[in-house]
Length: 221
Image 1 (cartoon, rainbow, N blue to C red):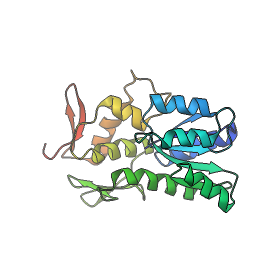
Image 2 (image 1 turned 90 degrees about the horizontal axis):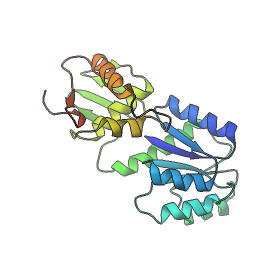
Image 3 (image 1 turned 60 degrees about the vertical axis):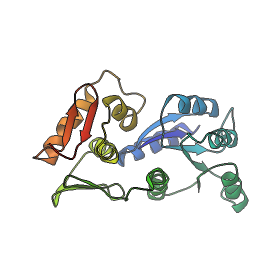
Image 4 (image 1 turned 30 degrees about the vertical axis):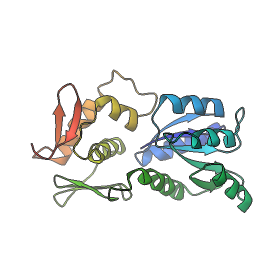
């Protein structure tokens, strides 16, 4: 999953990005509404974590702009305003969910994952293929009954491949969705991560390289 954090408090924004990384969620950070709208135009985010009180373009206006476009990511509005009328107002202008500060990180992670899951309503919460079972909410992976310990980045890449349901996922797509904006497009990070995943998942390998196209968890070797 890839998230855009729109927060003008730099300390909080950095803390949010670090905490999301621990749960295999890649995140970019911007500090105002104009930058948020520009970032959404360039990158494919799953959820926008949006502070309501922003400098420049107000968070409410960012939310309205995103809600007007059916292709835009989901919006989780984050604000210090916790009154009922504030929460209702945020939902009425198009936010998909609302969380008041201060909040518990565990609840924030759960809400982000719930919003992301809504995009895959036809799929079960746990992803299974070729003897591999991935539970995105418990961050657990099992291969033929054997627990597999993965880093957050490895977990993200495997989740993207399993969600493709046998389809090919390009290296560029993996880099876009599992890494943040600071990733070098010429890096070998994807190749290295795929190699490590294959080793950890064991034989027979389930991740196939499709020359010139990308990677897939195919039905057969």
